Image 1 (tube, rainbow, N blue to C red):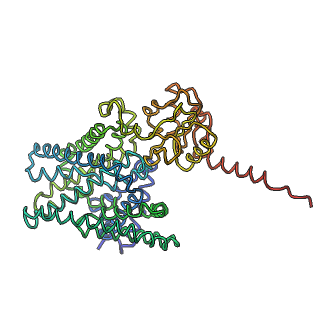
Image 2 (image 1 turned 90 degrees about the horizontal axis):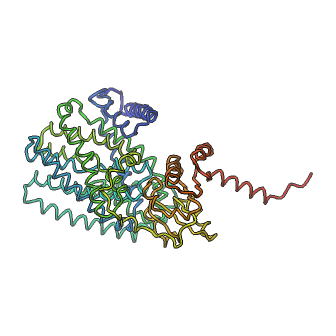
Image 3 (image 1 turned 180 degrees about the horizontal axis):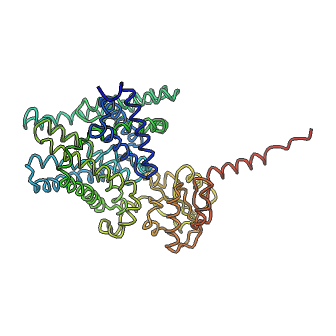
Length: 549
């Protein structure tokens, strides 16, 4: 029996506590993920002992994880998987190998037995797809180049950890001779699973979705049911629920309904993920964690620094810019919830003891909280460290310079951002014969044959990229980014480079216009206000005057 009379009351108190702590953290400019983990610790058995509905919270958490991976899958298509596949595979496997080997040597040097050192090393290897995707989604960076690369190697990691757990289960149950047999069986199941999904996606889903799309509610209900069903199927076949849910999203990514589904599910996803972070904090036993603090700090520093370094090295060798490598590398600076599952499996098999499990848990808590701050403040962090990161970049980072082409004869206008507003501006400028060069951080848009004019891959927040642009003959630089700090940073970079042309930036609302003008903008665009003013002028110009009575 818990502290509260029933589960409903307990859930209500947890939600109120989460809302209060979340509001306090927002006031203090702290990440909500850290706030919700703190709520779990506070309400968990180590402090207040309020949480008794562990099964119900775990169920809601699993629904949140399923929807998170499903929504991510909705944003992908086969073209993205093909283009990001090589770098994701190389980076994912390279980071797994590096962390496992170095982590094992560190653990063994601390006096751990070979089997315990192996468990600790493998636990340090895997990063949290759930937390990283949540953070990238909140920052609107899932569609960026570094976001897609990060997502790719996180999926590679998830597949590796599934194989590791399958192997450990086989060793624990039937001995070493069964490992190859189990792995082969899982491989065949995986191939059959993908073949069936491809056939269903091609021949059944289009007709079914055409019927369901007549009702938005029914379409969303089917999306949730499809995600949960494939998550269960993936888990039954020996994969994880996460892999199944991700495949469910990918299977709908090429349909015209993916944007409607994704938009409707975001709020539900965020609400359910709250329970994942509360559950993560509530399962921590603070009484066992103090004794391993010294060792945990050593392993945490290794994860927080070593994992990003190996990603930057691999991506630099593959020809990516240091900035892309740095932003992608930060996403592996923590261990995963799979690491805790792996530790629990080793504990149940008798391979490790409770103290080792406490060590893995403490490393998870430290790295998840620290990496959350690192990812949220990744751009300011990069600006501070950029001078020391040149060793991670080739003299010519061909992977990104090959994305897009520049116009012949230079550009009269350089336009940053090809979203709805930016693409509309680009279309009008092209119709009027302007030599236009656009810049966007979405690799899908950086294909001139799709946009009808030259487009480069790049970011308005990257000073080194801006320095490579043909600014000398450019009359206007236009940014459609709504974030004021991006606009101010772009203005500062352009003026520091000696750009003598005019700068136009976009404000989120009329209140920001004065600040951007003070920062040096020659023109501030306010999309909604400008559109409303033009619409009113057109209406008044076309409406006939009312005849006198």
